[in-house]
Image (tube, rainbow, N blue to C red; front, side, top):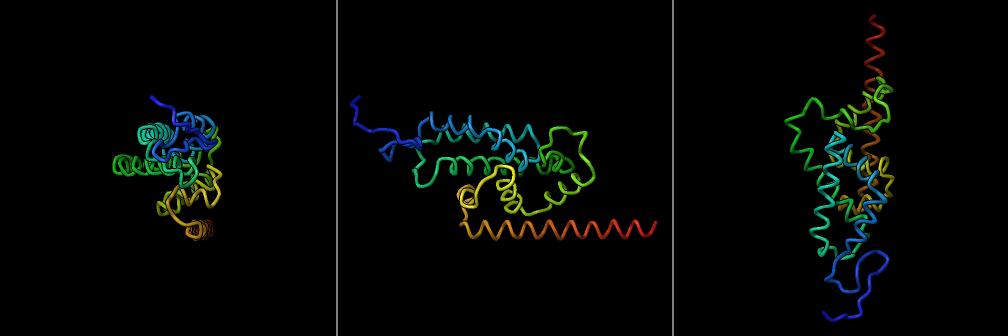
Length: 190
């Protein structure tokens, strides 16, 4: 094999556009960001184990299709898109099977004994959001992604990310206010 003098860049792809991304670059992102990928995937699937499985499957797909990475955007954005898509597919596949358990692990907590009524209510409100709003919230607050990174991961424009997050915040706020008013009304009846 003849060395064509191509070199890998810091982002992990070579000067040759047909080369895709290196295994080393994918592994680096996996090692550095697994916890964030796992939190987001768990939040999307509604289950920690399904979230872990989704991350594993997503990275397996990324490795198999690494030559398809064109380098038009950051490697991390490409990987986030794969992880979120696999997690959403996993959730869709299990929605009918585990409808009652779908919000059990949406918010990652270190100690399940510390969960209280407010946490349970918030999980329920998050689960009721449309998929894109829920995913955007998770990527913003659990994966700590910027608006532009979320845009890349969800294949939407940055302005759409802003609008999506605004709609999600508004929906959660209104839902929480409505719940608080209902609880107050019930307390007044007692």
